[in-house]
Amino acid sequence: MNRLETAERLHQIYHALLKQFGPQHWWPGESPFEVCVGAILTQNTNWQNVAKAIANIKAAGCLNPQALLALDDAALAQLIRPSGYFNIKTKRLKQFLRFLVEDYGGDVRALAQVPVAVLREKLLAVKGIGCETADSIILYACELPSFVVDAYTYRIFLRHEMIEETADYHEIQDLFHRHLEKEVPLYNEYHALLVRLGKEFCLKSKPRCEHCPLYFFLPPRSPLRTP
Image (cartoon, rainbow, N blue to C red; front, side, top):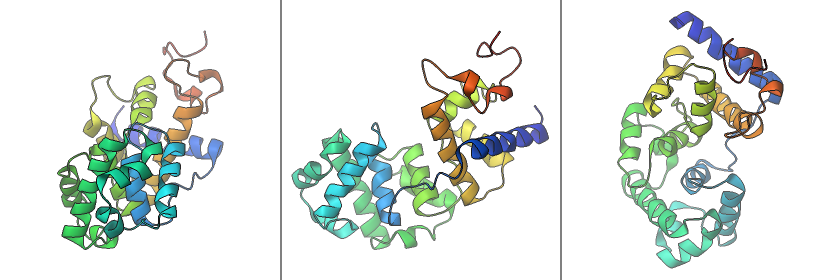
């Protein structure tokens, strides 16, 4: 595909998903800081477990950067226990909290004033924060345009032959950055819709292709097409 065709296909996929599922209202969180916490806790677990951990933090009256940072590691680990890998996530969350409090006074709004490229580098320098988590914080908490790529994105676009099997995170992200308008609502909704598709249709082992809203976008010779 040339650049124009790729852009058109990306928009077609987006509108097909939006028609099927409707707006997803992502990210679930009552404040930008809550979104940051959720982005770190959701690593290697599902959102239901993260919601339980955040509910524990709220019940303890600690859902602010200074209060969480003041907790000793054992107390914080107990609060976030439902999210799994709680000892590792305690260390990762504390690293982010120190960064946020020491460099930005604990204010996510101040974080959002940093240029996207600079902010991304700063977040990636925080131990325990990788590309997906950094971009989730940038897009959903700071409301800045940085497309979030995850396993669902890779699986869907590989099956539709829009990326190579060897494509890395940045190559996939560049597909969206180069061919879509750099708009936060679009990036937000697109990523959320891809997650929905990945959970309900584009399953890892037994994809439900025949009923998938993107079935007719599959390449003609795709093994996923019904003979």
